[in-house]
Length: 425
Image (cartoon, rainbow, N blue to C red; front, side, top):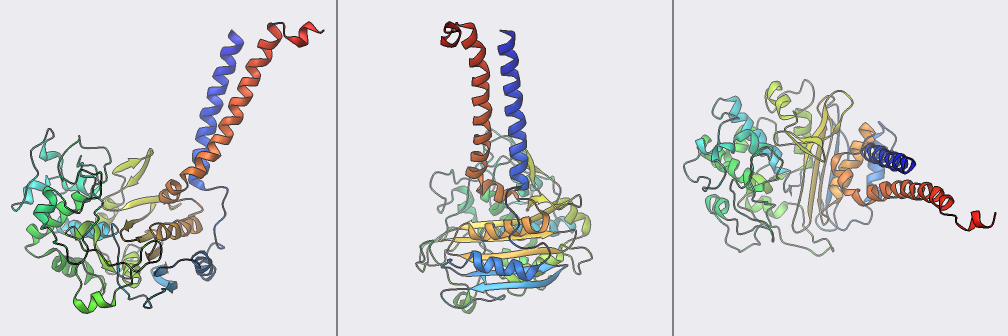
């Protein structure tokens, strides 16, 4: 019996060690080399061109090194696209909205740890079993306020009635199937719960505090100071006609969807403008989008997933940058088939902007390849997308350990039971 216990303890220890090793190896992506030699921007662009050869939608890619453009790639089966072509960027919008909020914090017009309801007159959180006071500006920015709307907005087709901000917060009529759609405190604050409704709440707060429309405030306070002349949350008729063509995942031309929750899901921007935003997060940037200490606070970990600190204030911490900080940015994915990504290393001013229609994963894959190329590690999105491969890798090793354990238990049992080998001796 003692021998059996020792074997089982050793097997459990081996499984734990193998689990830790395979998790770490998956994060480091040890079994897959970068797609181009490190530091070779031209080779990286060539690899992206090859990687997207079968893509049937529009794509724009802009590399940034040391705050300066260093390579680009554009393709479209419809109207041509370039660095100034506007794409709708889905949840990447939240990064810009967060900068707008932090501008008001710097001006002393908002307190990060104050309840959002302090700044609202047009709408307020509905009563629930959890106090409205837990829904602070800081927690909403980091998706830790206990909001349970579950919203990744589906948007409205042209011609459909679009809700007001207040009505959308009460019950979003463009909620994806199976989600609550009500912006409310439905859980205890602290744990990560992704909330599109929280950013719609911030959109309303910005309008109330600034006294401007959300689009007007963001242009004046964020985009114009950074030289992002082709970025806005609303398009004129001429701008709408010139935006990137949109496609379904099967290649069919699709109409662009419209949103009430523009701060959460409907920034229109370009790779050239995102390159300016990336550069503005680098060392010695002029003008920076915010004061250096404010930017540093946004990059601090505020929430975890899979035990990893990956959420700051309005941005994602994708991977260590090797200099004590993180690669930061945001992704977006929405209908009809939109995927967008931006990554930046604040220590160097290096980054990448990827805007895609016709696919819901491609931009994140390209941005993940950039992180692998720059740091030698897999970013958190790449790690999640490779979940099946990573589980297979773990399963093979775990299966070998279990097989060896069974064999180790069976051999002494077989000898002790007087099996055929003993009887024939």
